Length: 171
Image (cartoon, rainbow, N blue to C red):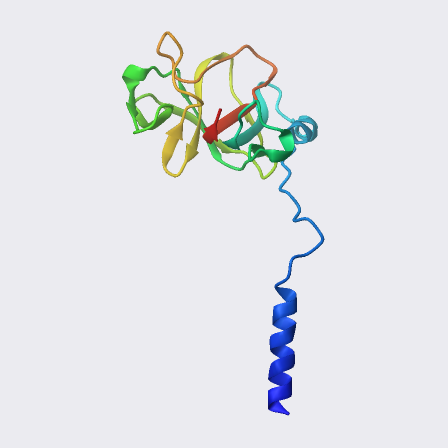
């Protein structure tokens, strides 16, 4: 009797190891839908709001969209606004666009939600907008031609400021 039960158990395990006719569902990250949904969440009167996303994978333009591993998904992260910061005021990390620290004053710290939505009240002015990731400062590609790191000019009212982190992506 025990042998019969053991054989039935082994047969059931083997049957469950076979290939399924159903395709494995792909992870779909609809950043455009997230941006549209996030627009209805805005409650600030003066500052910035937007959607933070993470672009990863093989994003080669010649690949078929069905055969690419490229994804751009909304992400939850801590974000910071510093006084306008230049490369002379920053300690770079090992990778371009990443920093260990800034010597300028931190003005605001806030988080995006699971849908990538963020908003923060701040007066008009020129600032540096970055993301914290694994203890490092991510600066959306680094500095501009004048040495300003992630410069954002806030002109007043509600200003949309979508941002995309490009990490481990191939183009």
